[in-house]
Length: 262
Length: 321
Image (cartoon, rainbow over all chains, first blue to last red; front, top):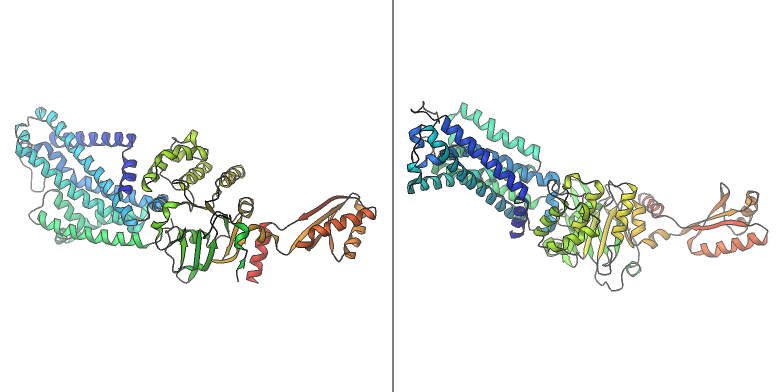
C-alpha cells in the first residue's frame, strides 16, 4: 500500500501540477469570496435563498462561509475527477503496468485512494485558508465586521466547515472511484455517474420529495449544508456511510476478481 | 500432439529448473477457449519465441503468467513459484504486454520513477536503463510527444526495472517501421545473459528466427511445438539450388539429378531439388563433383533450409489436416 501511495503521490506532487492546483485554489477562493461578499444583502432573502446577509458574514463562521457554500460544487468536481483518474488507468492501460509492479490489487487500490484523498484534503485546506485571507481583505470594503472571525469560536467554526467538506468530498471521491472501477471506461463511467448524480436524482426529487432522504447525491447535498429540517446531518451520515461501504466493497471485489486485459 | 525438442539443445547448461512451466493451463471466455490445456516448459536462460497467428492465445497465456488474467483451469509455475500467487515472483519479472502504456503528461523519466516506486525498485538505476534503450536524450520530454519507437523503448526500460530474471515481451516491434524494428531486435538480443530468460511473443516469424534459441509454437490455444529453434526449422527436408554457368547445361543437370534419384525443377537459370535434410551436404558435394566431371561448371550451389515461417506453416497445416 505504501508503494502505491508513493507512486500516486509522486505523480500528483510534480512541481508543475502543484503550481496549477495552487493557481486553481487561488482562483476558486477569490472567486467564491467575491461572489458571496458582493452579493451579501442587509436583509435575509426568501426561504431557500442561500444569499448571505452582512450580519451573518460578520459572525464567527463568516470568514469561511464562501468555502462552506462551495462544498457541494467541489464534491461533484471531485466525483468526476476520481472517475477520470481511476477509469483513466484502464483506458490508458496503465493499470496493467501498475499491477505488474504491485500485484496486490487491494493494496494498489488503497494506496492510490489514500494518496488522492490526502491531496484533496490538502487542496481543501489550502482553499479554505485562501478563502479566509481573501475574506479578510474583502470584508472591510463591504462593511462586514471581522472581529468575531478571530475568536476561538471563529476558528472552531472554520474547523467544522472543513470537517463537513472533507466528509462530503471524500464520499463523492469514493463513489467516483467505485463507478470507475465498475465500468472501467472514462466516457461510460462519466456518463453514468453524471446522469445518476445530476439529472436522475433531481428529476426524481422534483416528483417525489421524499427521495431527498434516501438518494446518495441528495443526501450529500444536505450534508454539505450541515443538514436540513427534513433530513438531519446524522441521518445523512449514516445512510451515506452505508452506501459508500457497499459501493467500495462491490467495486473492490470486482477489481480483485476481474481480468485486466485493457 | 505436441512436437518436442530436447531440453538440453537450446538451454544454457547452468540453468536447472524451467523458468516457466504450465500444466493443462486453460482460459475460457464463455464457450470459446483462448488457451486450451497448455502444457509448457520454457528453460531458464533461453531467449524463447512464442509464435502463433493472431488469436493463437499468446497474449492470454502471458497475461496468465503475469497475474493479469485468471486461468479457468490448470496450474503452472513462474521462476519456481505458483502462478496463483503472482506477488511471489513478479518482483523478478519485467514485462511489456499489449503495447506500451504510460501517463501522457509525465516524461519518460517520470513514468519510470512512478513505476519504480510501485515496484519498490531503486530509482537510481533509471538513467542507466534509459541509456541502455537509447532514450537518455529525450528522457525528460513528455511521453505524449514520443514516437511509437520511443514508446516501445521506454516500455522495454520499464520491463528491465529491478534487473528481472525473466523478461516477457509481447509483440515488442508492433507498430515500428523496419529500421525501428531492427533496432528493437538488436536491443532485445543484447539483453540476454546466462541467468536471464527472455520470452518474446510475436506473429512475425523472421523476428523470432533472428533472436531466439528456444521456440514455442501455438495455435488455437495449444502448443504445436516446443523446443530449440534449429530443431523446428531443420525438419526432414532441405532444398538444393544448383545453377550452371551455361543455361544450356540445365537438361544435363536434370539428368544427373535423376541418376541420383532426385527430381529437379527449373527455376529461371537454376534447378531446385528437395533432398533429405541430413544428406544435403553430401549430395551437394556429389552433384558438384559429377557435374565437373561431365564438363558442367556450376556457378551456384546452395543448401537452403526451411525458414521458420515455412516450417511453421507446414506444422499448422499438418495439425489442421
